[in-house]
Length: 328
Ligand code: SAM
Ligand code: SF4
Image (tube, rainbow, N blue to C red; front, side):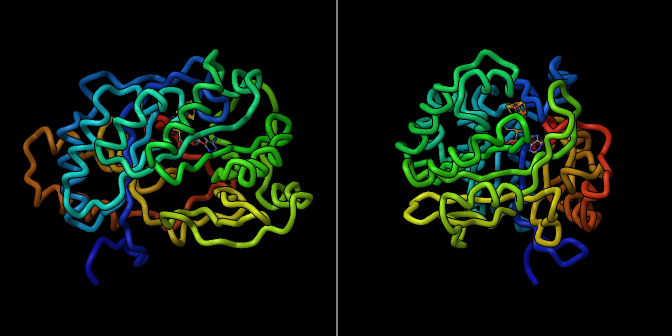
């Protein structure tokens, strides 16, 4: 067998990199209102360090890279990083997850740097609710314009991620689904993960099976293959839709048995699972002059300790770093 495998024989080919822990929003499901403790500047991996880690990982078998955060578009020179990664021969897919506020400003530049596609977090189509969920005075219209611009420059498919929360935005499930017909949107409904406590509703979890019931009035959902990628979402189409509906079930039905990913935190830790504490520091060895061959060995060793699964449904929550540092 060639490529990178963990000790459960899962092929590992996907690295998600949190390039900044800063954010211009404080989404109620992700961060406390006051934000999170930011890493000091000197602890944040430089683009050269990220590039070296991606090179080593790519030589081992990683061929898909996603930049995330925090809000990745807040870090200056992100297009430069994309260009550096795009030059690594075996990397064939570079994508980015953003809240979309700055997407209109950067879409064309990102595309020409080598970004292939983009996912945008969008939880409501109503400005007042947008302000409530993001705890910001940002404009929803900037996100919607960013989405259109990203589509027009060819960052396709633009996938729209909606974290569904009972009593907050579940009344918009059918509005989002209808957009897969009227505007060819690719919408993904994500189950809320109880990783942070926040003001507002006490139990916002709503399962994908409940979400599917809410969609019944719109017609029968037919399974359809993913447009790109082989992530955890299961895809369907409504009758007459050019767009698709994806369901992501981190809580009601974990997809760990097919997990192919690693995560690199802002401060240089390789996390084997979003929801487990195990992490291997790569920053210190890098700064002490580790060779590429030694770095590859370190990554291989880390991969061999990737846990079998997370235990969110059983109520186990990892302590330590927030999603914005790990890259949700
Ligand atoms: N700032 C960017 C954004 O919002 O798209 C990228 C980072 S954000 C941490 C990445 C993703 O994590 C978002 O799409 C959000 O949907 C997801 N996320 C964060 N907290 C979550 C939670 N408690 N439950 C489910 N998804 C969550
Ligand atoms: Fe920021 Fe994204 Fe977290 Fe919202 S989900 S607070 S935009 S990092």
